[in-house]
Image (cartoon, rainbow, N blue to C red; front, side, top):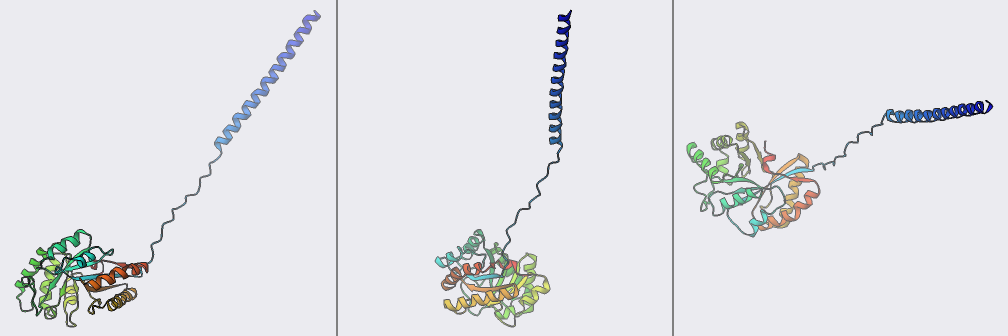
Length: 280
């Protein structure tokens, strides 16, 4: 009996011990589970959005628009040099010459702006220009016909400036007819201001044709030092007024100066732009 009693007591103790172990294990499991839930439920702190820093464009010192007149006379190293300039330049082509259409197409294809350098009443007619020239003595119908013809001859042109022709550009009637045709075709007119009596800019504004004026001639004096001085006068005008328009010609010295000085002016944050960007 005593042995059976002792055996029963040992069994009870073992059962109690096992239950104690089970309870401890259960507590550990429950505690671990709660910790896992707590970790999962903890709010995740979102990293603040960081806006990308954009590069700040340098402030423009001024816009310089340069027209190079007299394309069409030549097709050589000088004209090719202009067609390789690393700047937005506007090339003005005289109609009717041997290389007029060739230069117009090449300049356009290379991404430059092309305009018509319209001969207006020069007293020294040159071969090829006669059928395109605008004279103050012409009737309005004749002027309109010439304008249509020249725009068909140089379809790449987005505008026009005058070549000589002081008498014609001083005529309100002539400029009115020319301006009407330009407006119908969506072209602009830049007044080269070859005479102080010019009516071109005024009439274009009245008609609503985008227009502007030449501020500086770069190469009336063909000396490189003089051309450089004129270029920096143009730059100073652009700096004080926001923009300025200069006119040069397809000449070797003009090319040399522009190749040398344009990079320097760009380094000073001057912008070289097409004339279409500054007419209004």
